[in-house]
Length: 578
Image 1 (cartoon, rainbow, N blue to C red):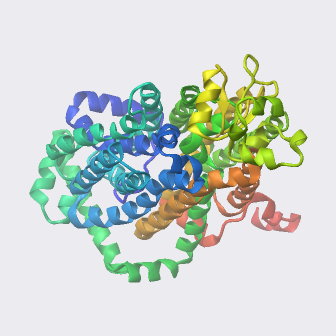
Image 2 (cartoon, one colour; image 1 turned 180 degrees about the horizontal axis):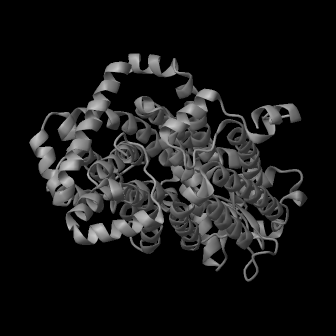
Image 3 (cartoon, rainbow, N blue to C red; image 1 turned 180 degrees about the vertical axis):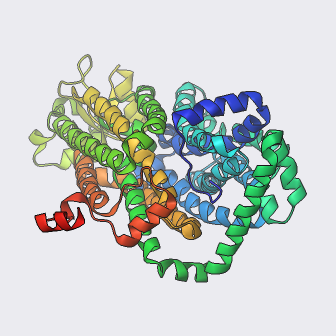
């Protein structure tokens, strides 16, 4: 992965990796120190899902305004778009090591700002800082690992960075759960991210720069000194020669495409192989986000509450399952992507995702239609001023149920002893909520009591299982293979921006969509968009399994057509070609 793409690994390479790391601990030190960036990446994108429940509790403006919740979640994604772009420039200009150090500083500052935030806008500012760090880490950590690792185990070490991203997300759910009963709750959840950033900063100070970057800066002796620590004596000379040839080739490519961005883009888009590769690369990256995965990762506890689990700690505990399955799926992907092919895995994954989204649509629709009804008597017993204003003014109160109450921005106070009996529709106010809970009742304001709730959690788990090994990992593999070598950086960068931008769009609109369409309608929308994504992958994305980069270029130059669109050969054609 000398050019910043993703390198794959097979089982043989993993065995070799463990053996090499055991005999050469210095390699493990380099890789693990850099891979903390992946852990931070995962933690900071996952932690907000649980923290948001308690931020809403502390700041009424956040609880009342959906766009504020969406902004707190999505500003880290917006910052990541900028961070990834700036990170690419910093990597080339100042080196990989300084870029990681700067990302750590941004992570640390963002964590402190959020932990001590006196107002929601300060949390948003902290999320932007964290986003800058996420974007830079997503670009730099894999690059540093790949350039400081022996070629024979490079793929496995870079894959470990991806595993740590999902591991970081899983860890964020665990830490969220650990702090649910602690004073300060969300401040601790968000502030803990500063600890690994602090550790990585000081570890990186003791580690060298990437040997490839040093060699490209004509600091040959420094590069060779690092390589002698990484490679056995009998391999050093050969590796130095290969590095020299690779850097010279890269310089020749730079002279061909130009050094400034405008000339690079002009030459790239003038190349039909690049254009066809870019269409495939963007297709899989956008499809990866538009299946709605980050609504689950960013809003999982909230979705669980939509399903009828009012307790915050219960919602986070159940969400822990989805995060754990995501990490397991990343491991599964490492072993199957080279066995079954990229295109096939993605299409199988998409079929599973569409099925799960349709199932979730049905579950949430049934939960909504079978929600407990509203009892005017129950509502009035808490006092006239406590009753939901929309319910008081409604002419068809006999048709109201819990879901009608929640959609009216009010709270449903369940019947004592049986949540499924008619309950009270109350104004959403902390004092009124306290009255409800004071009678040992459960107060619902994001979802309603439902006998279908456990099915929602089951299908969320199945959704993750079908996503992670396929659409979760394979689009990044495709983007590492689909571009001509001289344009790989440009193509990968454009595709990454399309991924982050799609992520931003989905995360910024999810809660608004649930208010407008309901949870069932929102998942149905994702199912429809995913169906379009399935068709796009079938029509536009070729199979690259087992092909060299040169063979991929030849395939794209010739033009890709899926099986059903290829012209069938007649008997004469078969005879002439046979």
